[in-house]
Image: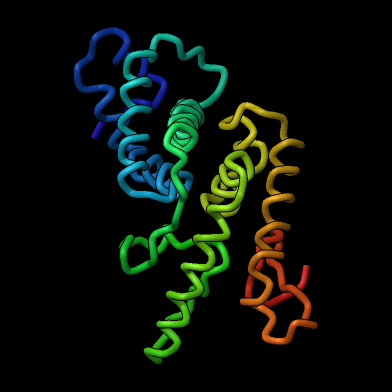
Length: 212
């Protein structure tokens, strides 16, 4: 495995090194795929978006000016490619259920992470996941992208603002509006009684326990 930095690999690629870009992709492909999958909600669309993005990055590598990290640049291209595919094809996004994805990181916000021994509980968890998928699908693309980066991928607001190329205040606003819509849309999942309060996590996403 190369010890070169991401920037050095990109520079080597621009200088004609046939292996440098491949090494760069190997380092970051898993997270790029996760971002694309969560943004599009569809494995086939995500695969196509990542392919489109990497082809674009391969061809436009000489346009990288070093004003941000190489990973930020790559994620920006992947997010844009994912959003472009969603807009062009009017894809209704969905989030894979945990057993389909094979990755804990694929689980959507709001899904209980605890192991469920009772088959009835497992069925309820699947039904909950489907409702979450539908709720996420109803979010505007800009709000969905912000929530994917900040709440699901764990980027800071500052990092997300670089990837989305918008002010930090805009990222915060998109997350706030998106979380509010999710909380309203999915309040019945967390409130057996219609009069019960909606529970939120620190980020504002709906969860099982703890008030803000």
